Image (cartoon, rainbow, N blue to C red; front, side, top):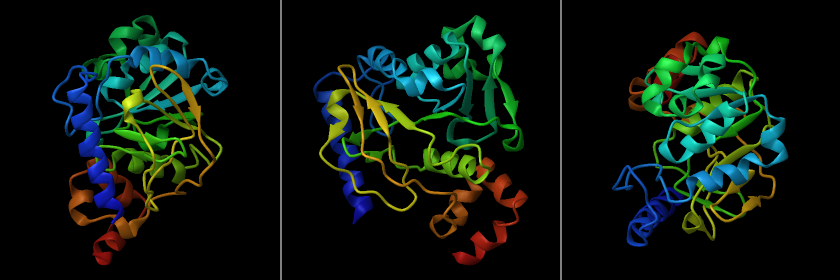
Length: 245
């Protein structure tokens, strides 16, 4: 039931953004974390928070609407961690080299040029987690494009003690992406703060997953996600996932 409701929310938001012409390149936005007009202003608003200013290490999703926020992270000379899209590889860690060219380094096509590939064992502690969103609600609900990569990234970082319950999870969206409510499943990661092109919202505190929930993983998902496959092998749980299904 929850998944069907979330699917309907995604489809409605994708359609609405195209109809109202607030979507930006790349288009069409269906099937994506949608880029939107006003993403730079939303990033500016979010960067003004105490949570952003206090963060030294920030993990950010690789999608287009968060490129302005990644640029602000680098302009602030903070450590930026970005995953390989769809977790096909390892993470990119961006520091001094990226600080010299923040706009270029913030683009997904340039991650490999400005970032250093790091194994999950070598990731530094993270003070702020930025996720991409198709829709959010004022009570902290969030829905992505339905593939679960943000949830997997968060779960792996949480298991390693690189984030904890106190680390804020934030996002930027267009005001049309704010909906009344979003059902949360056990593996979903709620947001603590989100910014639109108009204003900032802080949400009521909700508990976050403390790690990977193996019962929700399928062999197909594991095999299609090399980073997850390697992590489960190294932590001795791959066979357990295969036996669960």
